[in-house]
Amino acid sequence: MNDDDYVTALLRPLAGEPSGPPRIDVVKAMRDGRRRRRRWWATGSLAAVAVTAVTGGVLVAARPPAPRPLPDLPPDPVVPASCTAAPLPAKSYRSAEVTAGDSSGRWLIGRAEPDVGTPSISKSHLVWHDGKLVADVVPPVGGMTMTDINASGVAVGISDSRADHPWTYRDGTFTRLKGGTGFAVAINDSGVVAGQLGRDQKEKPVRWSSPAAAPEPLAAPDGVRAEVRDIAPDGTIAGVIGDFQGYLWLPDGTARPIPAPHVDGKPALGFEPLVFRYGWLYGTVAFPVTGGPGSEQIDYRYEPRTGTWQEVGALAMKTQVAGPGRWRFGQDNPEIYVGPRTLSLPAYLPAVDAYLGSFVVEGISDDAHVVSGIAMSGPADLTLPIQPLIWRCR
Image (cartoon, one colour):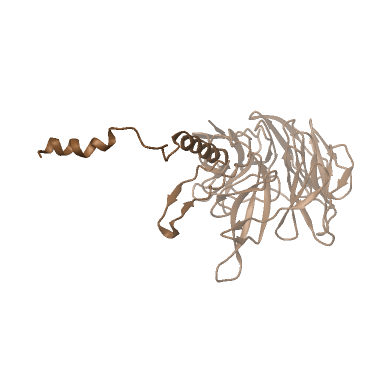
């Protein structure tokens, strides 16, 4: 038998019809397969399937958790590409300073001859609009300092001669705020004023709904000093309770502490708010020093609505925030925050010692296009005048 005859003989049994019904119901098998496939999709089980020899089973990986949506945060301004510095006009005054700027950068206020005389002397106050000097007004009492100004040109501040009192300025006129001794810290573009009443470390936080209104007390723990720092466009007021506890007074009349952030699973010692800017509350967070006493402070910003924290600087007092409170420091090379980033400002040195010049930023517009401040001598030499400055950025 050759190979062809062998193959023919081998396949001959398959040539006839099967002797009985088929053992496999092909139609049923296809229907069951489709049903299993539909059930798999309906349960959303698209996770990877691993077949393993262990116990002969099939292991199905758990579906990974859906990513948490990012909070809806305020948009940050674009960091300007460049800035130029120029002196502000100060008439024939030898020395002048800017003490506050508004959210648009159009209104600035300050005073003349700040480095001469004593606080009890009434010094002329200067107001600039769009970089031009538009007012030169002597206040009714001495020691006046305007700490904030809004987009309508209304300013607030304090007189520290004899008994401290809060004051407001508008259209060439100074008016004492109601409530007695204390001081006004900040005013927003709606005209709401935030500050404190009282003295001798017993001040209580208050709000004036307008410069003409009576003060409204803000809730604060008994026996603990409360200090107001700034007011947001929506009327939220930020301050400090005690030594390092950030606090918020909300427009609806409620108040709450600001919980300090956790870093590497460890809570910070506290948060000291400084200023509302770009929809965030900027300030410093204190952390315990590893292996030793004391603390180190790092610049953070806090978004009150979502509770979001962002570290913006590795070291406090390295970048300026220009708030209305009493937080001031100078830099040889001025630098400001624009959102979470920093922007270096060019120096302007003709009026100060080129080797000891110090720059203090007092105002930043919401778009970071207008910055104001002063250039002064580092060692506070009265033979060197203080120069009011404006930086224009694009």
